[in-house]
Image (tube, rainbow, N blue to C red; front, side, top):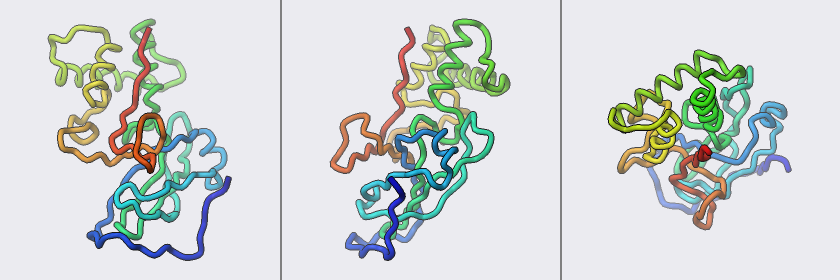
Length: 209
């Protein structure tokens, strides 16, 4: 399944929207290892329409991004809507904004530290310590010092409240009342509308047993 290319742009019948470029990240079901292996030849699937104005999208080149444990940057596909002027970037699901490591890997690190008292060998120790300090700081601020439980409980409690547990920001990365998300999931993991777009989809962590 290759990339879809058309010789001409479609005619736009949508409303006249302000010509302001908006950057939007579209989460898709894709394997980072396959993206790294195939490079620009990875068979990205084009979304059916723009999540902002429901008009067709067109390929708009590539952008480089880093994901752990890849040693070099990988190519992510970009798209552009000629109706609302938004530029969208396709990104594999399972990663928070501005994080190279997968959410599952971060949670595994926290769980391993709680159970064994050691850091994982296949991840930089400084990075794991940084996650641990950030988790403690975020938990103390959001949950309060009276909240009891191990680090795994803190991690899950923060996720349930819509916070990124290992973020340093309480506003930039985390959802707030009345905040419109800049990350949209195109993965059919829960009920969606006819386009399959979930406008406020959050990562669902696995429960520790």
